[in-house]
Length: 172
Image 1 (cartoon, rainbow, N blue to C red):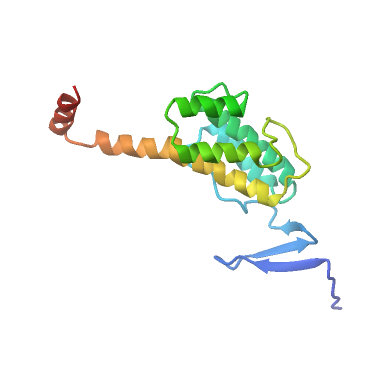
Image 2: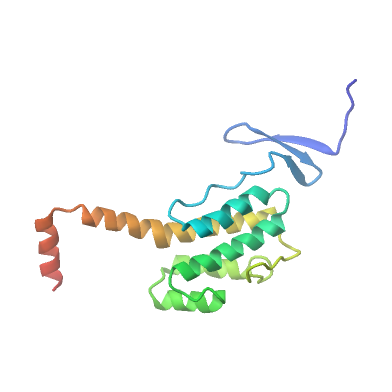
């Protein structure tokens, strides 16, 4: 027997054509992994928070957003800041030479979700879009502050020893 139930809807990914099943405004399939994977250079402790947020974002966007705010504060601490207050951390990172675009990304975190950026804080206005922006920001910050410096270090250290010596002599 076939019955129509307007509470359910199926949509398909524009890229891979994988189905998503909705019950009203909630995704019921797949239950996780709709967000991009974490940046490979994130420390393990931050990756764990990120992955947990990925696992629950469809069931609890507010819970995912809270975990991602925690991940961002841990990332600030990893980058040499106290990790207690995002405004102070941003100020410290800027003083340490943080690129302006990363500062803009961090300031975006401060205002996304009604300025709720304390670890474990859940904002009633957080939704899937807010969580998705926070996923992107974590990876953006990691790309700029962890991945790009690592890649530059790898390129530089692969230069021949005589060239490195010339550069060192030039800079002294």
